[in-house]
Amino acid sequence: MKIMRSKANLLLSIFTVFLFLSAAFAGNNGNEEEEIIKRSGLVMNYYDDTCPQAEDIIKQQVKLLYKRHKNTAFSWLRNIFHDCAVESCDASLLLDSTRRMMSEKEMDRSFGLRNFRYLDTIKEAVERECPGVVSCADILVLSARDAIVQVGGPHIPLKTGRRDGRKSRAEMLEKYLPDHNESMSVVLDRFKTIGIDTKGVVALLGAHSVGRTHCVKLVHRLYPEVDPNLNPDHVPHMLKKCYDPIPDPKAVQYVRNDRGTPMIFDNNYYRNILDSKGLLIVDHQLATDKRTRPYVVKMAKNQDYFFKEFSRALTILSENNPLTGSQGEIRRQCNAVNKLH
Image 1 (cartoon, rainbow, N blue to C red):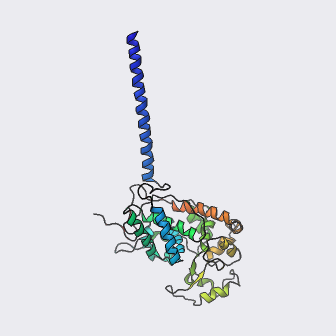
Image 2: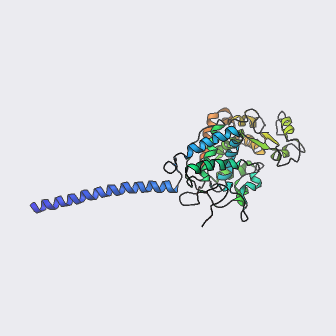
Image 3: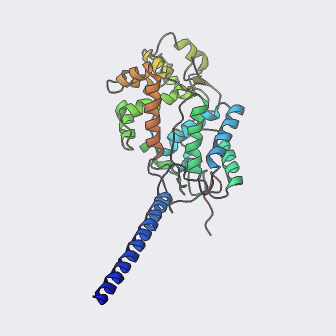
């Protein structure tokens, strides 16, 4: 009897130790899984441990640069479309041309993109705090997010953890980025491939609420004859700004996208295009195509709805096929890949 009790106690002790070790292992395993996710995918506050000041530094720099150069906000907003829509959100847009590689910045689809030097300014500020930690891809995305706030738009919580690509995708731009003269079907299809639905496309084009359009992109609607779809009350202003049928691409000849609130990110764009005051063909199509018009009408009436759908669509765009974990690299300079030794 005594021997049986001893065996029972021994078995109970072994079982207790087993449970303890199992619990400890499960706990460690859970932590490891969490760490793997953090290393290999996008998460909120990715830099909390490695560079806790990163997002605050980016926000401060965006605010400071916007005060000095108002048009930086529009550039940063446009950057996220041109980078993230082209196969991967990996800052390939920022790479300069080399003897072996053409820059995306030099392609026709990138006409009008500028102010890249100010992204370098933000990168330098972050590097001073945390060298080699924060990617240019995340800086590109977060600068767009914070720029939207500077011009009166919504704050959009976005995940981080992107890494930088090592190649330009210049030869792919026309495949992924719709031209302003293409049909609405093409525009919708291009965005659909990255998971953005029709109302999301309508919301994203609301970014035309701010910024300006170069006359190079407009003159075909003014010369040799004025496009009858344009509001005749708006035409004199466009002709005044775009007085040359063959404008110099390097000249400062442009029309503000929204004459009413040109520096404010709001839903006035939708009211303008319903009134036939959209500058680009795609603006006119957005207001007249039966697939998109209902959303245009709704966003024209309800700015909160526009902000909600814009935030949703931009989030999807910002998470398009990013490089994470051990993929890619963290560039030391945003305009050039790191030298491999």
